[in-house]
Image (cartoon, rainbow, N blue to C red; front, side, top):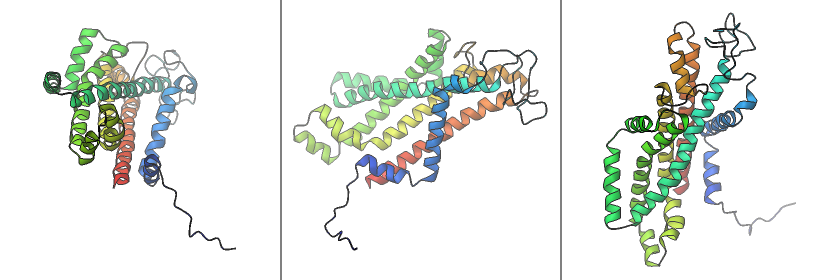
Length: 296
């Protein structure tokens, strides 16, 4: 039986649905999305995944290689370190603290930075001028140097490490949001909204932010990448996580003397940092391209 579809109307997709329809056609982006979900799953449920406690020492199993190498054991899939601690358990704990810290920093910076950046660009006069020049001055200092100075003032600990990294990266996000909103304010549709009497909050919510998603995704990805690297760097230098807790940078630092005897103790944390950055960057790039194609 024939069905007359002459008067059937096409369903109009929302911007989010349309972006998803483009995103899911990109195989690399979908693979990276599942990689992001997997990494976050390991970070959230680390305590339920590993069979051994990260700090438990097995004196009879010192420097065991991974199970697929000669002398390895299935009880310790990635082997053990020089004190007999399970490498997989310590790696997952390191992933939890490094990845979790990077996500937390990115989330907090996005909230605080968006408010400050939007307020600065929509505020005129001496307040905006002071904030503008202050941000320019802060951006001349390398973020890692800023984090090192702050962590020396605060004292070495994981919480202080996150605070120092957040404060060092916040000016970059504020400046990025400031530029993105300022560029959008010169668009004709924004001028039309202003002439129509739209308030600043309504202007930001319905006019500006929906149209600067692409630069925001790029900015958030850069902040997250730098946060992960700085957390790992401070941990490697001994200013981050303190024993018995470990993160990926401190794992590398604690095993650097064993690199010739047991290279896997350095290789696995290093490859974990590499995978975190690559997977999140591919995901963000796929999302960015989907947003751009959706706007065309």
